[in-house]
Every structure is written in C-alpha cells, then in structure tokens.
Image 1: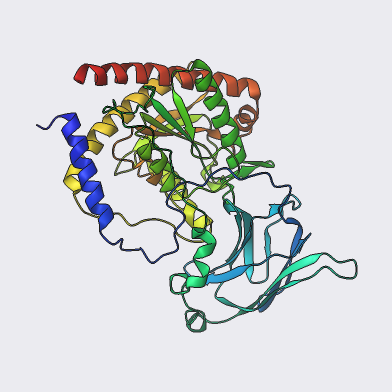
Image 2: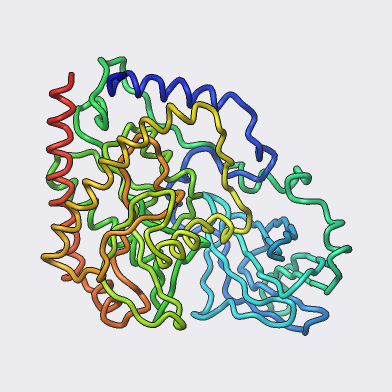
Length: 432
C-alpha cells in the first residue's frame, strides 16, 4: 500500500496529465481560471436606477435607466431559453422586487458576475430573437437608457443564431478579468497537508452564491447576503485565535463559478473547506427547520439532499452560461484512492461539527446528509457544506438575521474546526 505522501504525489501527477488533455467543453464560455477578487468600491461605476418590461407574448421591450451610457453585448441561449446582456460593472440600485416577468420574459435577474463585469439574465417563456438593442444618451430630462427588444420566433429560427462558443466576441466579457494568482513564497521544505509556509493550517470559507446569483430569498432577505455575513463572522473568529490562515472564496457580493470555489482550497493545499448556505424548502414540500451538514457522496442520502444538490449545482447556469468543466477520466483510480481518504476526514469533521452545533443551535431532524455537490469535489481537501438554516422557515430566518444567534453558531463551528484540525495536524506530524 502506497503511503499517504506517495498517494499525493501520484494524484498530483495524474491531475497534471489530466490538465494537459483538451477539455471536452473547452470551447465553452469560461470564467477566469482563478476565483474572482473582491470588487472595488462602486462609487465610480455606472448606476442603474430603474428597469422595466413592456409588451406582450409576441413582442417585449426591456428598458434599463442609467446615469451614463455603457457598452454591452447580448446573447441568446436555449434549453432553457434565455437572453443575456453583459455590461461593464454596474451599481444596481433598483427597487426591491425588480425582476418580475412580462410578455416573453418569465423573470430576469441582475448582478455582478466578475470583477469589472455585470450581467442581466432573462428567462424566456419560449424561443425569441433580439430584434434590436441599443443605448440612448440622456436627453430632455430623461436618463441614459439601455433598450432590448425581443420578438417571438419558433425553435427552428432560434437555433440558427450562433451559439456563444462560436461567437468569439462574447467570450471576453467573462474571460477578460486577469486570473488571480497566489503569491509564491520562497522555496521551502515540503509542508504538512493543509499548511502554508508559516506552518498554520489553511481554512477556506465559502459563502454560497453571490453577485447575480441571489440564492434563495424570503421576506426581503437573500441567501447570498445572509451566508456572507455568517462567513465573515466565522473568518473573524478564527483569525482572532491566530491558529489558522483563513481564506474566503468571496468577501463581497461577487459571483464565483462553482469549480473555482474548491480550486481556492486545492491551490492553497488547504486543511479544510467549509461552504456556507441557507436553504429554502418549496411551499409544496411543507416546512423544515434547523441546520444541516452535508458531505460528498455519489448517491444522495435522501430526496431532499438530492434536490438541494441539484439546485446548488445549477449555480453557474443562474449566471447565464453553464461554466462547468467536464471532468476527464484520466487516472480515476489514483484520484479515487485520495478521495476515499478525504471523504473519511470530511465525514469525521461533519460528526464533530454536528456535536458542537447541536448544543448551541437548532439542528434539522436529520442533521447529517450527503449528495453529489460539485463544490465539495476537491479530491484531497476535506470538505463540508453547512446549511445553517432555512430562510423559508420563519423561526430560522429570525435566527439567521440575529447577531446573537450568529455568534453562538460561529462559536460552535470554530470549536469543531479547532478539535478537527488539532487531531489531523497531530496525525500528519506523526506520519512524517
């Protein structure tokens, strides 16, 4: 049996080989290879002050009021039918509830999709073509406006529109941001797993959703904001102790593609990856409450876990384009060897976390679950996804917006991290 160190070496070689092969979906529109950096202050960005739809199921017009003109690009997408407008970063100051549908548009969403770039995505009732799109200068007391005009067509006419991957002019909107690089330190001796050059374990906190992807919403609260606030509080608690180097996948309202989130942990040789979410149960499925801890598995532990994984795994599509990278089948056996060990550590942490959290916060009636979450698929970093509560449950939502509840929940999570990493680092040290 190869040692753990040898397994890691083999895994690294395998992944390098895999990276050298052409990806099956390499022509698709991809985000920058590294996670988005926090956006800068919005003071100097164009401001969108109002948005509205007019028309019917045959012809529909979208109008966005702006304080200055902007450049833009558009694309139509099928299965499901959507229209995407890419613009430079915009400070959206639209009225609450903006985004309801009309005519050919079922609904639309908007937000930051990368540093320097914003996006508006329209979910359509069926195939439609863009008959006209333009920007009007401010004039006669009216603000600058971005206008998009849509017309109903049949599918045959729709599919004649070139797909985004065959339209190079669309790709730079998403790929133009320079990739984030992690500064390389001086040459050092081989490190223990999960430790940077200063010897502290790296903990990656991943607040779900962000930017154009609001996550679930209820009573005026968005999941993306609730989990960011929680993640920042957990970061501050861990950093205060000084034991860990804590890295956030996002620390502002930025959209991060799913595959880029675990890359943060892998690039830093992290000791632990914790993704934070707050679910909502569809009204037809009744009510649910309490925190739930998910680990990765090939088969979901129950139907609710499968539903949640399916929903979370569509995050990239929420942003307009499916940014998923197709996995290669190179060296699956080597990756599997490492992933088995990683899943054991992930499950161990999940049990520790449940034990700590149940003494301070309300837990789901089945608090430990598993499913095929894409964000948990780093083969060599123990990873969990924590649903800290249901925004669809009135009691949970009251907790989620409570600083007192958040402090207790963060404290129990920090204690679980302490216990887990103390044992893991001791084991790793003994193995060297």
